[in-house]
Length: 320
Image (cartoon, rainbow, N blue to C red; front, side, top):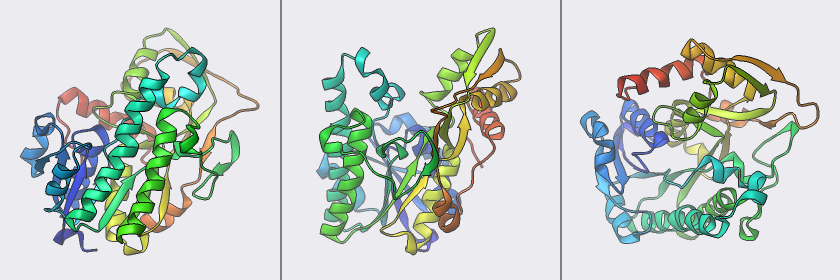
């Protein structure tokens, strides 16, 4: 697909990853529509050339009207909170489970259904869906997770509200695509970091206030939002990606390495030391397919952290 000749609608354009996706598409020459509940939240993008249409994930008719302007859709909007994504591990202490399930189900499962049905009704065939590596059964240690790994059963609510509803979302995306002849590519990022982040960045800032900080050598997949956004562009350009799923989990960085990189980027921080984790030494992902077919690359952690710190400090979100 020649991206310079198409209009791409991005749901959740005012969110952290959505901003990076819009900018990467603009830089590649696409016309970009931000599909959001409140365009005022991303007015800075309007100044950069993003057009806006107002629509909620739960309003299929409004989505259909918005998508009539588009040749392709990036189904990006979803509900994500770090604590909910880790619900499996805090379940004994978690008392809002039913409410959390309903919120996630409405946004992630029903929202996906509305987006795909609206795209079909609007005659928009090409979709890139933002999914997650969290919809797989997590294995600790190697071999790493890949696109053929065993998935959770979302219908049985395995893995907690976020992970289960994202599994249902991805399953539904391909099912509706088959029903209507839509052309879907699914991208599966790990934990995403970037400017305007309300999950990882506040946590790192809090941790950096301690004088001494022991950190486990436990690996998690971490991806820079700009790197994930570049894969959206690559997927739209590459028609061979249609019908495919790509793990773009990011680098397999230990919590100790993340803390050290953040300290280096900030220029100060606590005295930290690693805690070995001899048995469950982390969750690893294999991004080889995306690297080969989409040109996926990870920016070094320190460089990514420095970029987002500079953007947040300026109060502007200008990335290149």
